[in-house]
Amino acid sequence: MIYRLLSAAILVGCLVAPATAQEDSITVRRIFQECLKNNTAYDNLRVLCKQVGHRLSGSEGSKKAVIWGEAALKAAGADSVWLQPVKVPHWERGKPESVTMKVSGQSRKLKALALGGSVATPSSGIEAEVVMVKSKEELEQLGRKKVEGKIVFFNHPFDDTHLRTFESYGSCVWQRVDGAIQAARFGAVGCVIRSLTHIRDDNPHTGVMQYVDSLPKVPGLALGYLSANALEEALAKGQQVKLQLKTHCRTLPDADSYNVIGELHANRPNAPWLVVGGHLDSWDVGEGAHDDGAGVVQSIEVLRLMKKLGLAQRFNIRCILFMNEENGAKGARKYAEEAERKNEPHAFGLESDAGGFTPRGFTFEKLPESIAGMDRIRYLLAPYGLHDLSKGGSGVDVGFLRKPFPMAVLSGYRPDSQRYFDVHHAHTDVFETVHPRELALGAASMASLMYLMSIHLP
Ligand SMILES: [Zn+2]
Image (cartoon, rainbow, N blue to C red):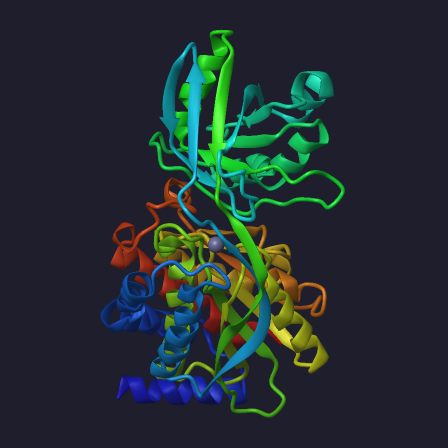
């Protein structure tokens, strides 16, 4: 009976006057209760990780993931599901890479992964002396004379004093993205980087790297944290240290792929869109469980909750499983271009791409205080541990909506970040590292924000 009265109140509220704080509070509680009791996120993640597996753009895994995503959105109750075609880069690691450290006649294998996009070495490998730098400035100071013909070791570790690990990542990621370009500028023949992580294990962490056509393309690899320590220690003794690098990567022609999109339709004509999403592709190691299987299954769960609880009323809702976030963001570019071309107004975008850990809050590209109803939203989300509503980035994928829809509110889901870079882009990013409660709480948090935005946005 209460349920019926409440539904009526929400419906009347939507059509006549905004819902009261008490109605909103009851709805948020219903979202959490339904999600914690019946959520599909964890079971979906198991299938995505164990039956589809890793799914780099252009791979067989990515094709399976598209088929899986379409079925999962239909099962979640979407009013319509469609595939948006997009051409994506297609890079393959090939046979496992190897890095051998040679000091004083002794050889030692180091744990390493080729970076995404790296070229192959000749089949016999590349062997050269190593120079270590912690910054671009140090590399400039060494100059061509001391770098030419050598392998550059970029060794700028995470800064442990940052509270949020994404800040550490942000200040170190240049080594991975730009390292091979910087090394080639001074005539180096290859580069290795310290993996971008806090965890003191030896699992290397891959990720995208870039080249420019004006410079030679030299191979790039990431070393495990302990392997990077071993290399650093050997160099600190002032002895000559050589590395032998072997990579077997190749870049194939761009491949056909898709964004997978599920929709719920509003009960008023010409309603703007609220979108929620994560990225369907992953790196080619591990299972892409936290990055970004978690965001994908949470976004699907948001759609399921909104359908089941009848929360898509004033706005159209889209759940978007973006293709190719990891090495090109071609899916997100395509989605934003098409939305602009078709003149589909977008009022809100929410992305989950920071792992499936315990919810802490959301960041907003605009000052939260400037967003309609934010005082009430803060008050309603606080009991669920969502205290961190602050200014910050939304995400790589929904960020592409910024330009065509400057009035849209863009937000990123922010779970606890302390363990994310333990598994990020590594063999260890597997289903078993995701906790069912944390994952579900995140989905409920996201659905609550979607609902509250649907009530408060003009
Ligand atoms: Zn990601």
